[in-house]
Length: 331
Image (cartoon, rainbow, N blue to C red; front, side, top):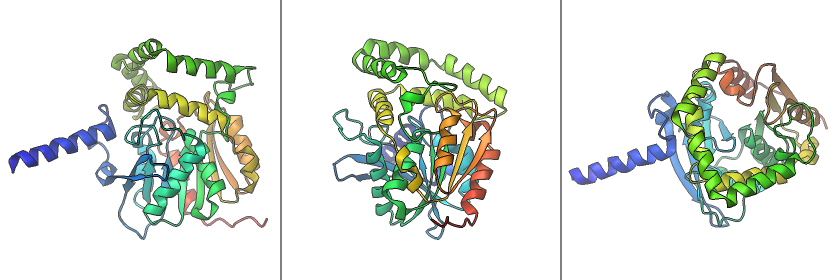
């Protein structure tokens, strides 16, 4: 009996370590105790790991679409703000973390991730939900809005683009010719040259390096989140799923929903930072202009992590938007 109890506890500890990562304290945030891990098999046979927070079926549902490589630890300020009023559903993208990670998984397109979210909502018997997307999650959220408009309430789009991510990334002021071609060659080189990837992994996951950078940026921003987030993010991205992470970068560049934006009628809050080097501010402004029913929040000194840089201001604005009554456009 004692052996069975000990085995069960060790298994639970292992699962929590896989879920939170070694740098995240398992009881740091009150909402961590609400997380329930679940999974499903998609029609093409891929195991998808997803998480639910909150059990009150009367509350509306918010789905969180992660940035590429992130997990729940990157959403702490938003979760602390919205959980008293909403249930939350999120998932690990196919190919990453607890979802199936075999490199022979063929379907990695943004539409596949949107289909995975629809499958999760169907299993949880949720007819409609809000979606908050950050970075890669913006493309997933917009694709979901296009494919499944009847299952969507509102959109919150943080630091993202409508598509072709490598063609605009790292170009905050003007487009650089052949940048996308160069980045594709770089990605393919890293996938094929394991020694190069290993060297990058060794440097980028050095705890002294990530710890110092995270602590310095936390002090600069007056936000407590960056030390742990940066350490855990580096470990996650450069871990066992690294090749799939690189494949997803290429899928982000292959995808575009630009031509469908005027057809998305749902209320949308577009949030960006003017100093974002990864998904430059002009992309969010373009989304804001092309969506029929969009609102905006501009943070002049924000970068690609505005929800962590402004851990009170941004979540409060999101909560106000989700709870507000917005008249649908007459189109």
